[in-house]
Image (cartoon, rainbow, N blue to C red; front, top):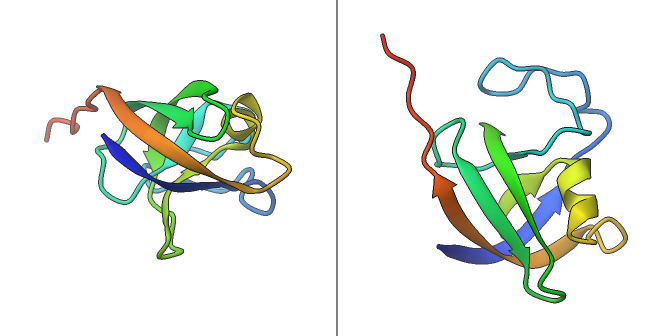
Length: 102
């Protein structure tokens, strides 16, 4: 479990490659995290309104020092953080992603 500030990213990142090689789609339920393995599923709770969403980690970030996760637009919309742009959140790992076999 981790608590901190979430932000979201949209244009101009929509359509660009993510750190795991996928194309970023701001309408999918995905997110960027600094250290969690790719494909980890995380429950994100907005601590101001208790709304939740589940995202899959497919990118690295955020790169602002006071943020713990960057959500897609779709995920940010589900927890009502589009207007403010950031929210205090709690992250709970639901399913740890697996590293690809080499």
